[in-house]
Amino acid sequence: MPCPDGVQTDLGCIPNDPFAFVTKFYGIGLGVIGGVALRFIIFGGYTILTSQGQPDKISKGKSYIYYAIAGLLLAIFGYVLIQIIAVDVLHIPGFR
Image 1 (cartoon, rainbow, N blue to C red):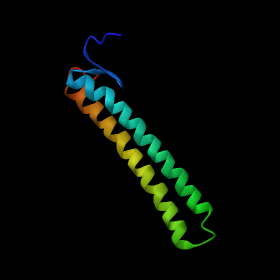
Image 2 (cartoon, rainbow, N blue to C red):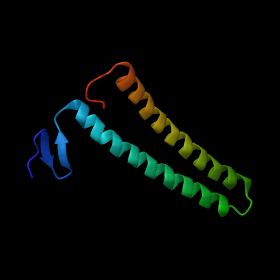
Image 3 (tube, rainbow, N blue to C red):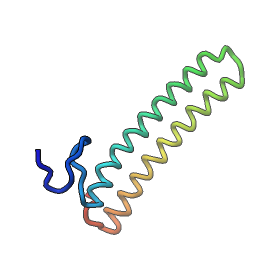
């Protein structure tokens, strides 16, 4: 299948335009960050459940959950901030 605006690779059509390139892979990056955060939240919960009341393991599990949620929130708010600045304030073409 031809790729009119980019280069055809095994990963699909990679756009030549920098804005389209960033837009395509930023969504993929957010998905990866979400998946990693979910795994760390599950692992933190598992660590807490199997801690057998040991305070160091409980605090370790809580820190896994806390930092996973903090990283996820940073990624989401970063995306929202870029959308507000690039689209609403500066009206940069290609970010819609």
